[in-house]
Length: 529
Image (tube, rainbow, N blue to C red; front, side):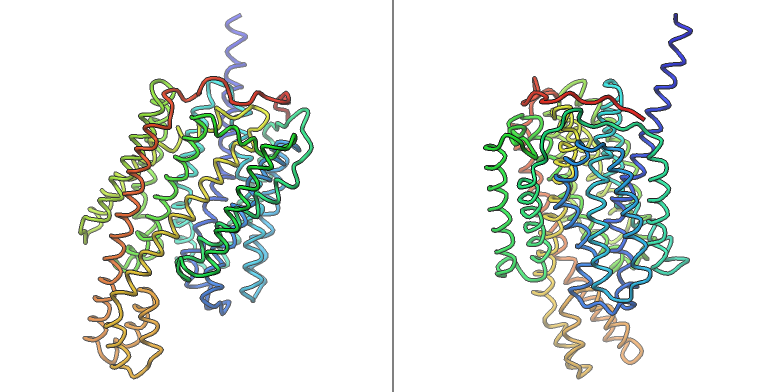
């Protein structure tokens, strides 16, 4: 009997491993695409003759569309089959990635980025729900840990791959690489098992529209806030309208018989603590990415590839501690893991804000401290969400997790970007006036006022004529950036320490907070090939 059971267990292990390889590959492509164009923008913008607003939306069109469509896309995956939705999303993602190669207009490329974001919204929830529905119960915590680690470091992978491609090829190679990877993964995805609801409810069209509009408007307001200012009418109107639609969405979900998301799930302490923890983790990590990458490239003088390599300590640390965090949370105590991890992130961010560092090794140590906290808390938070989501709603549960990530990232970038922009403007005035007087070119002074990146471009232009002035302007502009960067990190760290206190009271001791708050309404169809 023993001899006949061992090969079966081995085959199950190989099948589970292959599932993890395929879905984590798809996840990495989606997450890397969020970060890749940040590195390539200096080459793409001149080629497309993009304005400053268009440059912003070349990046943010993808993020906004992705965040807005996650919940409806997760529900569609539950209804029609998670593997089928994954394959379809990868095919559309490949097409959207190829189209910019033949488009000379920035507006058209922005449209393709929005299409890629829509495809990513179908891919991302499917990857996690395929893990939780396809792995044996004993392997799910490990599978979620690996998924969370890949999601956490995928942005750094995007920076690295883009840096390598730009080192040897033009910016078109980035889109070719994403398209080729997506097609390969679409083919490989056909070899894994699928799952879906056996008896799905009627699709909630009204809930889908209101949730998508609510998230899109909030993210739009957050994207525009650093440039326009938080008091700008467009920013206020977008955020207020988004919040109002969010309230309407909750009311609809509580009153209707067929719903997109059973909002009573948030009454489950583990589910709500996991969701809030994910939001704060990405609030801190993407806020840190925003300022640290600028410091590496504009102050340390690193190339895009060197900047990506400089973040590798974060990759190693997050991957290692994601496995440790889940093991401790499952075996011992979720509350202390989420609280401790969030507190460590907060301490790391505070140190980034108050330590005056001029060498890479000091920055690396501070990044490792922050990464330990992210690694410890990221996988347990996602596991708490998925463990307390009914089996027939795994796609929606995954979408909640992903939406929390996107909202947290958008808020973190908006807060950090606003603080840096305001602080830089407050300190750079005398420097810009000096440039204007020396060059007798008002536009040169305006460029210096806008950002450190543009200030360094101005210094490169005036260096042949007046090297002393160029060196002085570069040094003072860098100081004008470093001071508010420290303030931004301090604010992010303070928010995370407050969040740690919230976790201490909100999170339960066990990762499964008793029975799931809502019993399964339908039976889950078993995975099939």
